[in-house]
Image 1 (cartoon, helix red, strand yellow):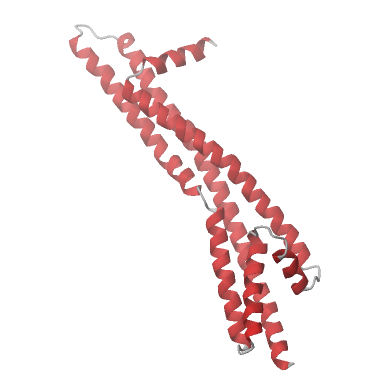
Image 2 (cartoon, helix red, strand yellow):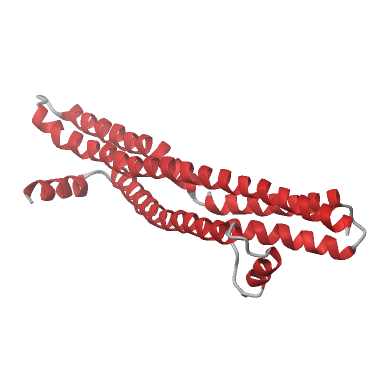
Length: 228
């Protein structure tokens, strides 16, 4: 308890510039933790929804029935479901035109799925760049506050006849807190960014594999339609 009070006293006694640096780092840390908790929920939900949709898709369900259940649900689609809905809707639209060859229908569906995949990846990567920025810049921001605080402490010794370590120790301690806060903000942000980037990459590969497999199914269906 005494140590906590001492740290609080050191923070309150710091110069206004160092206090501003600490406040900036504290705000960055709070924002990072909010993003970390939300992004964890979003990515975990995306993985679960992908598992459920793949199970439904590969269970032998009729594609038209599956597409109808999605489009008539009046809800926003995302993830693998969004890719399927975009591709199959375009495939049906081009099939209804009746003048498209198999290759043209499949290429149109693939184009729609690529767009949906790109948008889905962008949604998953949302705000990850903020974590990367906090992780890479926070230590330097804290170091800036530390350097400034140490410069101020030594500058105050100019008018002193006899300098002792006791005279500069409080000022240096105040300054070093800025470095500690910089690390406190950076470390969780770096860990969160690395973990979530890896998770997004795995989902992106999974979505892309589904797109290719679904394209093969549409290719077969398109050829069957032309043979009828």
